Length: 362
Ligand SMILES: Cc1cc2nc3c(=O)[nH]c(=O)nc-3n(C[C@H](O)[C@H](O)[C@H](O)COP(=O)(O)OP(=O)(O)OC[C@H]3O[C@@H](n4cnc5c(N)ncnc54)[C@H](O)[C@@H]3O)c2cc1C
Image (cartoon, rainbow, N blue to C red; front, side):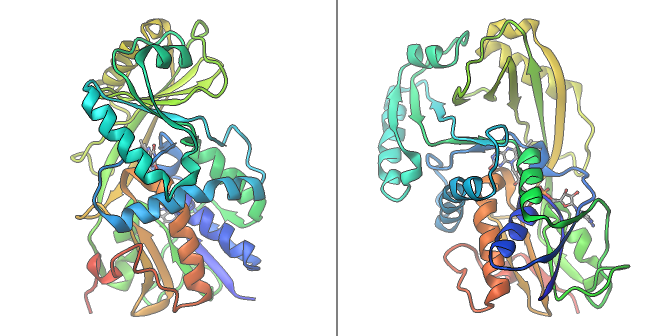
């Protein structure tokens, strides 16, 4: 049986291990240093269907990725705290725009049965569904939209797959091995925004830049949060994600000039808190319990990429998942596992060739 080593234990690393395990691989080790992980920091909204992005490869990844969750959840017995189809609502002030979004939703549903019920929802209805909120605009409701707690989900998946998990920063050697460890037959480098750093010993230039993202978690005993409230994506404000029992997540920031910095900043904290209070004025009494900070990976065309390195065919990489990586991540992981099993797997419907993003410097 082949020995598999995975560097990076975010959504890509954990789910590649999951799909390999389902295919009968039993000797899998994940190395993760748990610094800046986007998966753990994320807002966790899974609802790609109303995106206006024209990149069809991205949409295939996002739609197919979102659709993989229910089966993974069933197989790995993932709890509702880690993944739940709560529904999602996106609002727009202009009623023509709401109608256009609804038309798009109807069209997308033809190839996305996971969306389930879709309808235009009035501001009054939204305020009933998410008590105490003050909403002025109508929106589109998608009952199949979901939210995921990235850290919890990955931890539950790892428990199911029974991978060997090593909390450590590891390095590749110049001949493509993991320094200090016995040889692996295949290595998957799923180090997100740090892919360039990981591939330095192999002499690759990687076209990926970091983007800082911050969000806040609030708790307010007076806030009524009934179970299974939808995620709200209000126009012009931060996303509002009720977790139940008075807990709410608000986020996230998209900071392109902060590099790999992981310090929470007061300006963003205030901005997110004000945004939350605009949606639910009751939250002026809320307490901020946590601020999460993570680093997203962006390519110049905002598209993820994955595949094997032509010069090191036993090394597979993935990066560039940007702000929708929890949505595209499951499909990327599935395709990586399929490539490991059969190198001829055709991934061209989902990503451009890896050479568009990575150059071997010789
Ligand atoms: C604030 C925020 C909000 C977001 N909200 C959403 C959302 O609502 N919906 C959505 O779909 N997506 C969202 N995203 C995007 C999504 O979280 C990411 O695209 C996705 O999680 C990336 O997964 P990954 O596995 O590629 O990388 P990561 O999750 O970043 O994992 C990479 C891991 O590799 C580790 N690592 C790096 N180098 C080494 C090394 N040498 N040795 C060991 N370990 C190493 C890192 O520490 C990290 O833990 C959000 C992201 C952020 C930051």
